[in-house]
Image (cartoon, rainbow, N blue to C red; front, side, top):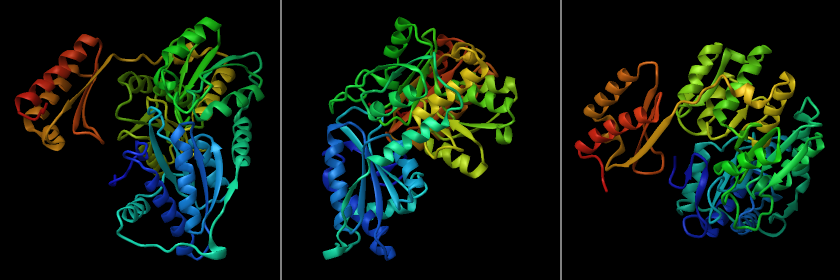
Length: 449
């Protein structure tokens, strides 16, 4: 990770950590790098979520792009996966999504995508950072070389058509609940489900610039759980602010995590001979019950570091077709280059309708293990994690758990924090073993207040 760009873009509180000047500079660099630097006029497509600050960043990016001679195509309020899709399909030099995903409204982010709709290469991001830090100069465009903006809502409509084409079945007679988180999916998701024949019930679809993710969406799933039960719905789906995540709720109101979704669709692919390499991809944070359920059905799993970026890298390198995170970032590599919440919900519907089973029955074989995760602030993450006494205690817990659970010790990617996670048969066991390891970290003097 660089100075400004992490695994999911340049993110921070609007006009505090991420300013409109940063957005102008990013636009200036991209407009030049993909344009005059390559002897042509650059074409860049931009989408945004419903945060108030997204409008400011949209105009700032456009200003920078045009000043460097690029044409900026504006998709307006739309989802991250839609920008990825249109960047790839309509031959743009790069794509930009303005969103802080599941964060509160006062945060925002700028996600950069390459011409394939994938997260931009680290090499290019470092060049953007050098320009922001004043380490290089680039010329401004003049006269007829100055760029323009183009209204490109047609791109969003094309993406909606693509989603509708993904379904193999009519949804007629199925009652579906959608929590669109007052975010980017609010103008897209209902239209897709309605077009496929579902009886669609929507909540949190009145964005005002300040209520995105506020007590709603995939990070506050309890409201959808209650909604599904009260309305007698067959299924519910919840998205985050930019709709690259999806969690589900079965007809009984039970939470269906990203792990459940990978398991359900992985089994469905295996049954049809479509699961290439007989593998799915997940991160090390997936639940132990997920791994045990895969073992029972004879499906292997590649484990990556936390972050959908690493999941996608594995899929590109191996040809694996489905992967994701427990939080709901699910990637279907045959159809998308990023997590796509609405596409994920369509794929869950496909399995339900193909197998003529309720979601609760499809998810039943995967039993979630109790989990306890505690964070401890430390003076040095590597020193704390690699301390011989700490490692010895982790090994001791591993032996005690055997094949009935697991312990994971990992460094936070953004904070001076070590995360200690245990999954076992009971919450009491989890608490005991987590505290044992933290006690050793404390005794060795690694913890800071």
